Image (cartoon, rainbow, N blue to C red; front, side, top):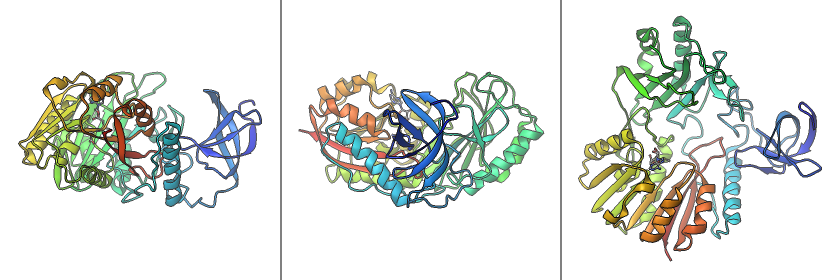
Length: 439
Ligand SMILES: C[S@@+](CC[C@H](N)C(=O)[O-])C[C@H]1O[C@@H](n2cnc3c(N)ncnc32)[C@H](O)[C@@H]1O
C-alpha cells in the first residue's frame, strides 16, 4: 500500500490507544483513530510504524449503533477525545474489554465486572495543558502527531471559563507579539498555556510556559486573564524537550499555590506537581481505597509515589504512622504542609526515588503504590517480595504495567479485590485499584 491509498475495511478490535484496528489481506494491522469494532470504514494510509499501517479516517460506511453526535466541534480531529462520538455506556464497555483482555493475557483469573462510571463526562478535568503550534494554534495535538495542533475554539474537558481564558490569552499573544515555539526547529518563545482548577475551591491557576527569555508585557497578561485567573505564573522550560513543566517560575499575580478539596481534606498544589486530574473521581478513588482497607486500620502505612500526599492524608485516620515517598521535592514540601494543615501529626514525608528507599527503617503493614504510567522499577518489585508487607493497594493508571509486574508479585501475593474506575471519559485511559494480600 502506498501513502494516500484508500481502502475500505471492517474494524474488528480496539487498541489501548483507543483506535479501531482492522487487518489487510496479509494480516497487517491497520489502525484508524475515531473508529470502533463493527464499523466499516474507508481510510487512507498516512504512516507505517512498528509493523502497522497508520490510517486516516476518510468516511464511515457502516457506523456503529453506538455512534452519537459529539458535543465538541473538534471531535474526530483533536487528540484530546478519542471516543466522544460514542455513547458513554459503550465507552465503559470498551474499557472493560481492554482491561479484561490484558488480565487474561497475563494469566490473571479476576475480571472487571463493570467499570465504575465517572461522576461527570464533560468538564471533568481540573488541569489542561494547551500547547502552542508553530503557526500560532492554541490547543491539543492531533492523534499520533507531535507537531500538529488543533486550534481549539471550544473544549469540554476543563470548564467553560477555560475556553474564555484561551480567547483572552490569544488577545494577549497578539498584543505582545508572542512568537510560538516550533518543536521541530526549536525556535520561538510561547510553548504552553497550563490551566489548573480547584473544582471544589473555585480557584484557577494559569501558567504561561515559554522558552528562556523575559516575558513581554506581563502586566497585560495578568490584565487580560482578569478575574478568571486567581493565580498567574510565567514558567520557563529552557530545554528543547516538549514539556509543560517549568524549570523556573515567576509568580505574576495571586496566591502561589492552588488549593483543592478532596474527601474533606484540603490540598495545596505546586504549579509543577502532579495532582489527580479528575477531582470528583479522585474522591471516589480515595473512598474505594478506604473500602479496600476495611476495618483493618493500618499501623504503618507506606504511601509510595505519594505526590502532594493525597492517599496518605485522606487515609491517615487512626494509623500509627504514615510515611510518604515521592521523587518531586516540591510535591514533598506540599505533602508536609498539607498534612499539617489537615491537623495530622502521624505523617512523615521523604523526597526520594521509591526504588532507593531504605526499608530497614520501615515495617509497613500496608503499602499504597500509585506509580506513573511506566509502573514500578524492578527494584521496587523485588523489595516488596523481600519485605512482604501484609497488604498492598496498587492504584494504577496503566493496567499493562500492573499485569506485567503481576507475574512477579504473584509469587507472594494474591488479588483479593480488583476494580476499575473511569477517571477519563472519552479517552481509552482507565484506573485500576487492586488489593493484594500475602498468599
Ligand atoms: C500517578 S502519580 C500519583 C501521585 C499521588 N499518589 C496522587 O494520587 O496524587 C505518580 C507520582 O509518582 C512520582 N514519581 C515518579 N517516579 C517516581 C519514583 N521513581 N519514585 C518516587 N516517586 C516517583 C511522580 O512525581 C508523581 O507524583
